[in-house]
Image 1: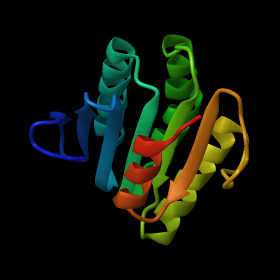
Image 2: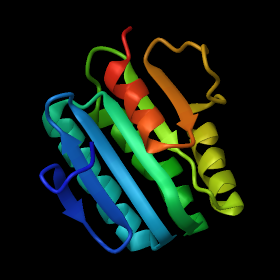
Image 3: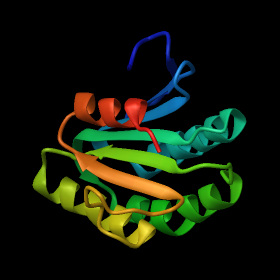
Image 4: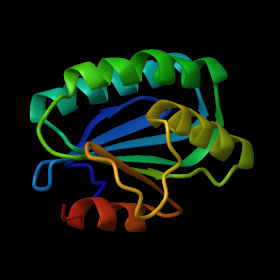
Length: 150
């Protein structure tokens, strides 16, 4: 879970946590997300994921107020392709996204993820290399990612 012992990076919009026991990386975002802060956090997360061969991710977007459209575009067009190249480890990657309570932020998040992974996340939908689901709470997302059995 998120704790000060697991926190390895922080800036005004992001906290990054790494849970070594279960090899889970948590990206927690908040507020009006500045593009520079977003890039710094996601690149730092990518480095950590590559170092530890992370296959289980939680993106907690619940406290986001607004996302910079250029930041979402950067994540979709630059970060995600870079991550695909650098994170080629055996096994299925699990990603859980906790949606923002703010309507426009939620829609921006869903649009970026759906455009990137090319499918709507639906319970039971199978992909050989990736499974992604949306959640309303961190506890639900963590439970799914931590206890998933392929």
